[in-house]
Image (cartoon, rainbow, N blue to C red; front, top):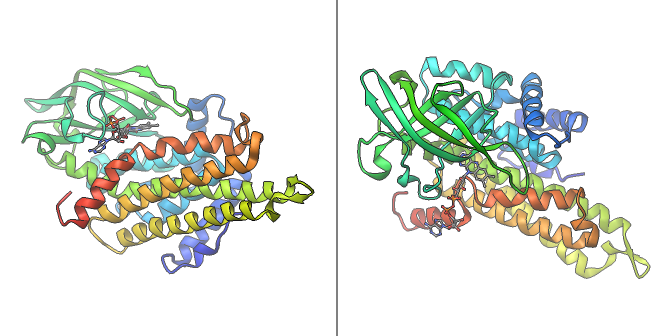
Length: 378
Ligand SMILES: Cc1cc2nc3c(=O)[nH]c(=O)nc-3n(C[C@H](O)[C@H](O)[C@H](O)COP(=O)(O)OP(=O)(O)OC[C@H]3O[C@@H](n4cnc5c(N)ncnc54)[C@H](O)[C@@H]3O)c2cc1C
């Protein structure tokens, strides 16, 4: 049973504790799902998370980051695909939640009900960490924008109903010349050109825009504000990536405690061996430290801090790196069974890896932290 004592920390209010308990019950009854067909599984997960009311927390004028983190942590503990399905509704609609017009916000009713799937399209083949290098462009043509270019590594690509897309509109150089757009998946000129397979499969695609025409009203926020919008969305969602990592790590520790109590070596349970106890202590310590950073960042945002770049970067960096170490130790303590296909720790070992890369790789988080500490603007 995962440690719940952190819920008594002063970061939380009673409604957070009630949410965690309700979700835990839902997870126990509904997860994990069959991952055989990830498209189908994700569509069903979005629908059922919506019906159960949990997607209500994924978007809206006031995003409660502590709730987002608690939900991601709990879902990740039970099923990585469930966490992914929840998270993408939030990330995909993040710009609309924070900056959308009333017309654009109408999509939120659908994504929060689980009746529409959302995606966030920032990365390009030649612009990953280097967001300022985005090349896909939207050129003003009368009352509309004509768009061309590519996006890749787009989660939910191929199954999404609506995409938030960041394009170069040219108001300034580099990061100053980007804008955000809300693009329904059935927009003419938007094509899914490739589906991507990864070590922990979920829907992913490369998109192409060719003579894609968007009305002026599709722009989210002001012209040229795209980079600031993207970074504001990532400020909110980076701690939640840390929370997902935390969920994976807690599950790895739970599995390890179970295993160490049952497996006997030289007549004694593994848990009686001090070297194993040392590993378990390290795992528990890393989990608590990660949880403190994740919920510190979430709490700071919820208390009204406008930007939490430093706290968010610390939470994501530390929680994802530690989760990788915790899961690696879990695999080791499971011995051969730890690498056997289908074992929970084997699945966690694959699932954690991408979290150290997406929404800003670990090295990029270090740069953000250093700049903040050194007093530069990020
Ligand atoms: C599973 C998965 C899902 C994703 N989902 C989405 C999505 O939904 N939407 C979306 O827009 N994108 C998504 N991405 C893309 C993701 O955000 C990028 O992969 C990530 O930003 C890194 O970009 P890149 O892959 O181009 O790597 P690169 O930018 O080429 O970076 C490679 C490595 O170089 C190092 N590095 C980079 N910059 C620096 C620097 N300044 N200083 C020092 N070292 C540096 C880091 O170690 C980094 O890992 C997803 C990626 C994955 C793997």
